[in-house]
Length: 280
Length: 280
Image (cartoon, rainbow over all chains, first blue to last red; front, side, top):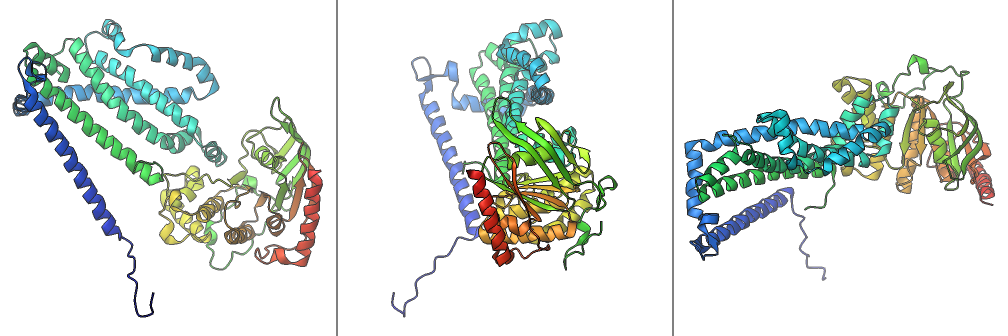
């Protein structure tokens, strides 16, 4: 380099530049996903039709018919009560099962609890949960309690195993420090165990809600009921309204996707806040 | 006990007042008394054998010895994390049975909570004691200032801090712990040489203010001579006290200069010989 020339300085990107770049990436991602959806719908529309077509309309409907049913579901208001019925059951069941799973995990983390409860939990976990539907009906009758028991019985294990995993991963030195500082077990549970377990529990919720939806819709199909997304599906299937059934399923799919997105964002935020995780 | 005057600019309110039960007269019982202690895990070799050690109130005792000689085990026994196979350990005159609430513990790998910022991490001992949020935050900020954490960093989480800052944070937490004894297991081993000297000086300054008893484990002879009122060399296989050397120079010492004094060099050579003697 001669003395008279000045090399161009390398300018580090500012925070605003980085934010703008991230925003551009996000817009690109959304557009790419929308584009893919458009391609899939176009493929579906072009290949739907009567017998012999790749996607027969008696099995899949056609995008235009499904869209028509989708609009009808909302304009008639039918979807809201059904959705609420299913969502409420899943939420009640999850709210009840999560503490039970967490408490069971805490109880089995000490020798006596492990000796007494772990075999019971392991055996009941092996039982196919939806296979218990008849027993629940016999015990609880055809009622909301049966639905809650069925969903909660399945989701409880997700919280149990998530919490067990979290307890196994607790930094023992942190636990000792809490106790040396004079913390009660309640304080340890609240400020250390639950807090350290929060990513595991969010992850469990991410699995529990879609599983809960699937089981509840199955229950609504099996147990005679007039409300819920399962009942709506059953009604459309009985009326041979394939497009209506697909519209309901599409709606369930969207709800599941949005829930997963929200809980995934929560997990991502947590990972970022504590400086862990490899997903960039 | 007469408390030393705080260093200029140091907020004295951060120094916890001793509880009445823990207040010791200069001629009271020693902070730690280990008598005839043996320890070994079932089915393994004996780790400690016939260990006798007395640590006076307000003394800085440094333990050195080859890896595996039982230094950390001895700290764990004093903390009540481990129970001796035989022998007696007393802390402030009381037998250690279960976790020893007279001690705070600081190790090379800190126990900071990843989901808490610097202030909330440092304030943990006060939070456990039930101090109001406002007061504990105020005192934690003062402690952070005392250990040299800039105000701009008080809202940062551990993963956003350097190793040295994390060590300072851990020291800040010790400042707010209302315990008579501090156990330190190679707390500054992972930081660079210059920072280590600064942290040693900070520790000596903090000791000057609080006059707490410190049992300090290190592999660094210079560090041992700089910090300790006494340096104890341990044998290995099994761990025993091999050499007990008082360091007859007043505290606080200048951490960056003291080690270079001819008298300190003589002690260095003596301790090195003692250490080599434990390896044969």
